[in-house]
Length: 97
Image 1 (tube, rainbow, N blue to C red):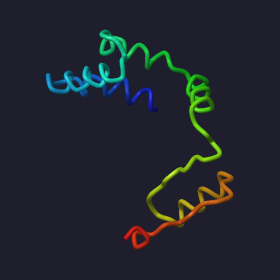
Image 2: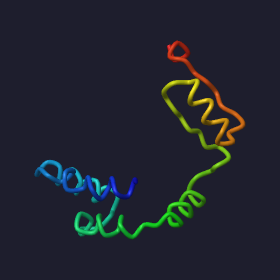
Image 3: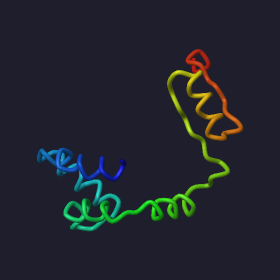
Image 4: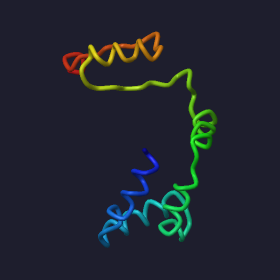
């Protein structure tokens, strides 16, 4: 779904001169090369689920990973338990003040 979102949204994300300039500047800042805009969609299309998993294993410390979820706490806690999560911390909006 993420890949389809990125590919499908690309034309809209480059629909104005300002948007193209912004995307090009991002490519320049991250040294993605002068063909970045032309290569974006084909490169995203080539990414596979195993590629993503390999990148996560390489670049993320899963022992220190924190996932933030917002919404109905009862259904979220239930879903987390069903998915096998053993620990979680519930924070209310009041806790953030």
